[in-house]
Image (cartoon, rainbow, N blue to C red; front, side, top):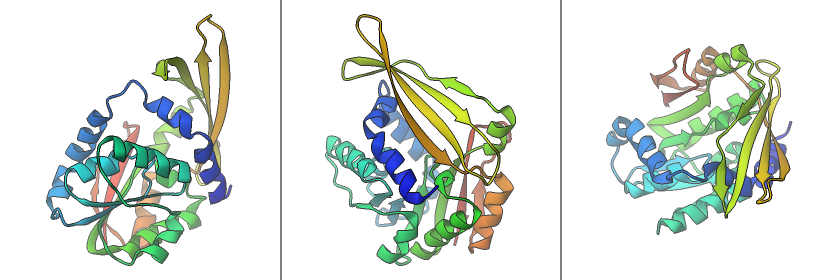
Length: 255
């Protein structure tokens, strides 16, 4: 798996990324994100520079911009950048956007950010241990001394232990069409390439169906491995809400 492959995987499914978010009030996601990090955000001024380093749909970047922060958003996928641009425009906001892989961040920025968010389980698209170390090192180079990096991830120990093969999501309605998203997990263990196939089943008015398939690659890691890798790249753990029974967790690391 190469980073370009992950980029193309996200580029190809941009339309269906919107399908996944259909039927939701995205402002609720924005509020949840801000409330989750209210203490961290209260520790910096509104002039603080914040990077959303995996902006995707743009929910987190827009939420931060609405709070008055100086926000920049990046993503490896140009199509994700377009989605963020559209969502920001829909909210009458302007956010600086750049298509950048994590490895490219130090070439563009130099220890200027007070907070860097790597949200949405994005860090799992690192190609393995060494690649994750390089990506975390990139974050370390672009955050100020005393600045924070927030890493959000699935709880891979729980997921691999449960070894769930199929997962269907509720019906989505988008552009007057109905879709059923179906996840097929192909799990092979820590620090190796795993992947999930996402099938969007479109339900026609006559009851017939058609399917569109996408694949996303990822490399699972353990909670302790993430901590070790953050420490190896020069961070110290500031906050960690890991729970063995939770599906997701995040770690705030300080430079």
